Image (cartoon, rainbow, N blue to C red; front, side, top):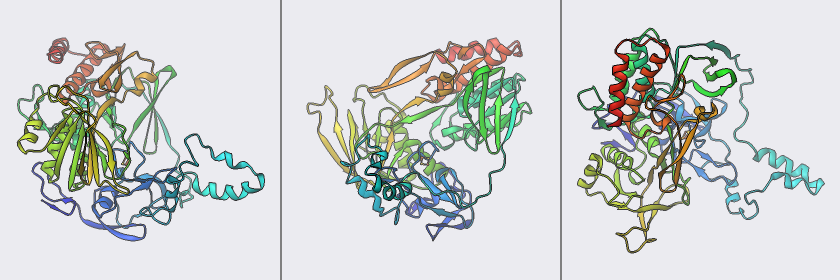
Length: 505
Ligand code: FES
């Protein structure tokens, strides 16, 4: 049941919307609930364009809701370039759009999109230095056009950042299911573990995933978000566990120093063991109009629906290249959205069965096998989608187009490991074909998740594409780290071998 786009009743998630408050967006009051993000409040109140692109001023809307893109940058309480999908509302907060005049909806600079023949790729604004006498006129115009956002109103210098050095026994980078599983297995052996997580809570994207599954040793099925809450609670009971949230490990420097930055702090870690469990990024396909407001990454949609309690739209088409497409389609359906179809690049024969696919078929939702998205239709927001059939033995007419009217497109593309730190450190890797026209680089790890002495990679950062696999890999990495440190108990080897066997099954 939904009231406009707010979800009030959901079959799986209980929403406890906080107290109603008011924020101001471009001078007008917007209702919001305490505890939700600015993005959720604005989206629920009907805002679809959140920013304009830098060069052609194309409209941009919410996309990843994970802090990975720049589509939701706004000025918040005078501070420019704040990601509103990551910022919680506060009473009387003042939010302003940037980079658009007179408004986000109607931006005069969008004319640049019509004059693209004048400013082709490779065009540099320094071409305008001639004739010399015109330059000062251009300069004023260019100064206004360049950059995004206006400098902060508050001229107070920021408070100094505290520099802290730490040498934990085990440093886990990434607090998703693999990172939590690694940390749990290491702390159980008595290791002193520090976990660095870039978001405010442990769990990664599974915090917002309502799929049900059974993990080894757990004995019964649970929702993904229940598992991560349970594991986070267990970790909190260990005094040798130290959690740094809202902290990003961004560099691995000479002399084995890992640098991380969090609120007011700059960390320099020199751990004895490091476990990289940084997860993965969604890598969407490229198609015409792929930046239109109304196009979302599947994890963005999960965050909007299950974190913020807001629907992305009323009618959606899912674009997919794996079973993940069926998972998100089921979740959209359960939240109350009409799923008008799933276009998946795999053929009917190569698409393997999964419970979510059975669910979708039982609801008579059309599945377009061997189809890709050709373009999104719409000017300021999605009005429809054009699908194109791919060559396939079962399809005598490749290139056939199908148009579907919809207000949202959910992209459930393939994923690429977020393993930049590993390669910064110089670890070996191989390129593998993830799905047609998509390569990923996988680090070379042995059966014990070891990349080199004292360095481990677990979960999607190492190339896993399955929740159970990530959980087991985390367990192996945590146990291997304690073994390397020489603090495992007599059962460590036995547990390790069982976990390695489970992984190979
Ligand atoms: S960073 Fe906010 S939508 Fe991507």
